[in-house]
Image (cartoon, rainbow, N blue to C red; front, side, top):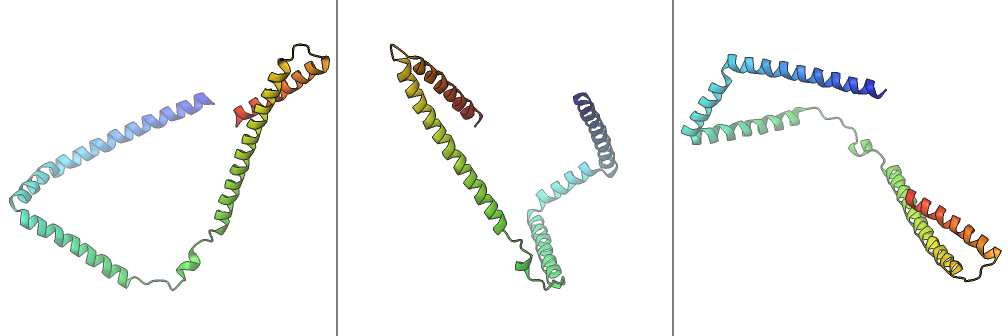
Length: 159
């Protein structure tokens, strides 16, 4: 399966490179045919010689574009629908976010309680291990608490 995915990715990359090369050569041919570079250089030279005209033409084009946009927006028929009615009710989304946050808070609290329980068990284990003469019940309790501590540590590692 991985080999097929790898081959598919390689084929896609080859196709993209071929298409990119074809597009680049097409654009180069068009730019040479239309003499785009020479025209840009000539326009830049004219703009350097006539800065006031260049600024006036630029500002005029922007003003025309603004006026055209205003005219189009004024004469475009607008629907009489209530815009507020189209807005989706976001209350369920906020309720979902709140429930997620509550779940995270519960998880953080439980992890904290688990860590405290592990620290308490470690203290109890240390005190049981320090007993010089242990009974069978003490040894069984040490093993039981040690297994509990192992489970807590494993659970905390997965959190």
